[in-house]
Image (cartoon, rainbow, N blue to C red; front, side, top):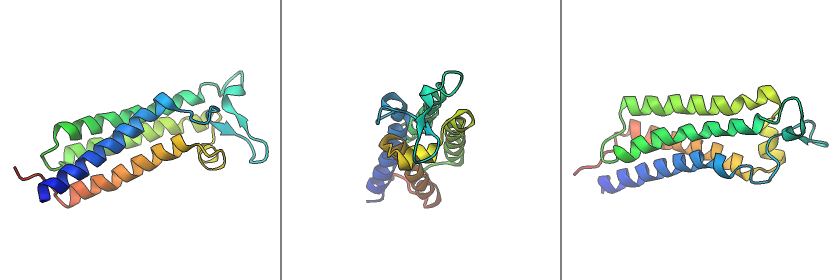
Length: 147
């Protein structure tokens, strides 16, 4: 029973991270990318000629989520150790840090997610948050597969 729970939680954790890592390959789902400006008259960052056009490239930061996902798949039957958990936290910090660099250029991430209803961006951040919750569950409860 414990083995089944551990495997299910580990698979869900890895699936969420693989999903977040795949978002850059099909984003922007709404076709416009990051937006900026007031809610009443937003403009897309790709319309800017001097800068802003490369803001959409910052979404590639989510690809870093594939590293802890691959590690969890490889170490599936083992409990999540401190090193694996630390690597996961570092990859979250780097990935989300890279994506947040787009705000220095032109993009407003919350504006894009909420008012422009960009499902891809919302789901990527949601997947990372849910993976964080599952990582805490795997780490703190000591779930492991008993062979």
